[in-house]
Length: 585
Figure 1 (cartoon, helix red, strand yellow):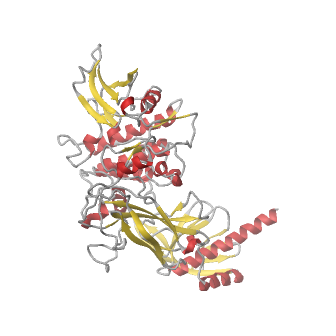
Figure 2: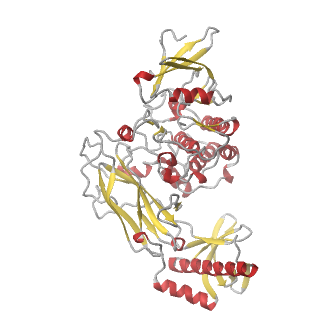
Figure 3: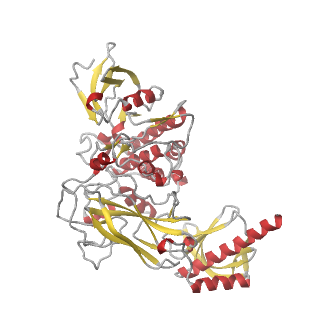
């Protein structure tokens, strides 16, 4: 069939793939798995996984299994032949990673994303038994003669009985750079079909950028481009040109923007915030104008050291660590430099980048994971005050990713991630009162190896409270039964954004917005009305009414007044709703 394994198509962690031909003339790909007797890691599990998973499938975007062989230690899988190879050969602009003789247009990339999403939706919902793939990446997307994408390599797949939403799984499986955060750390949530959604999103963003999502070779002057999802997110947020190759027409720019927004939704840290593959398909087939920009993603997945680096549940912790730990390129000798300072510019130059990089020419063979020594939070944790996370890098740490979180309890396994709070600095707001604040920090070295996630609570692990002066002002408003605040309300006139003066009035039973003496609207407090503070927007607040309408206000540059307004309204509302429930009882 394979002419004595004459033509080798590729090789992976669990075997090699050869080109073959059946007696009827059909070309096939024969995946010969490693000898069980020579590989204690395999133990036949990936073979049984692949046969059990793919034998249950029949979809145009899933590779077809024609047959298999299981003879003692010899095992082989026979697939339909994909003449155009895998997706990774076509999507990267780096010619070392891609086929230099062929490039794809945005329409083709978009159709790839559509096809792959249909295949994944089928695996998650269309099969009698739900199949979770756990290794979605460009190398596992094969292209037929018509460049139709097909999902392949089910060696790490897991079958779910019924339509289980959360599954139990020992160890970590997948390829570094595409693994969902909950797969390698259960603190992020339960493992489910949303883990495949994360991998899909990371792959789509690589298709958009034409590069790996994490590129530690980025020059220091362009270090904002180190993590592509953050870089492209900032451009979308600021409504800048996307800065991507091949966007010559408005239509292609819309396709690129749609792929980017969908990809960013898919890689949300919280699995519950990610769309299902059915929703992904709906978003891709809808208009780009209907898509909202998601919260800024927090880097969680271990970055790839090489394209073949994979995790498997049978690996020991030591094996997993050594497979991703830095080798001779690990940075070293920078323990004396605070992590928030640019080593090149000196200690007087604070870095404001979300991804902070430290350069060092020293090298070491130390295989220890990157870490931060003496991680601490500076600043008084009161509304309006700035907190700063800092520490000293060790074991070759070259960059750190930050994410600020809120907790109701220090032992809470599922914190609330503060949207956009991915800087070392964080300004405490009224939203943090009566909650615990912590910063999550993931150190990485220059070789792409990720250290353990570190979590540090602010305020000595006690809940945030207002300072005495703010408490007294709020108490005065409550005792008087009314409070008035001069604010600005954003209004749209034609296509222009205009801020107009308004008076925000709070009392014990309702709130109202006035324009001098004219009443704009008034509403009693209810469970469906609430007030929030958008992250990163100085002195702004969003009022959502019971009918679902939202209104954006600002207190100018007075952050303190904004926080007093928010806390006063919440106190009035809480008391009013409590009194209503008491009356009904």
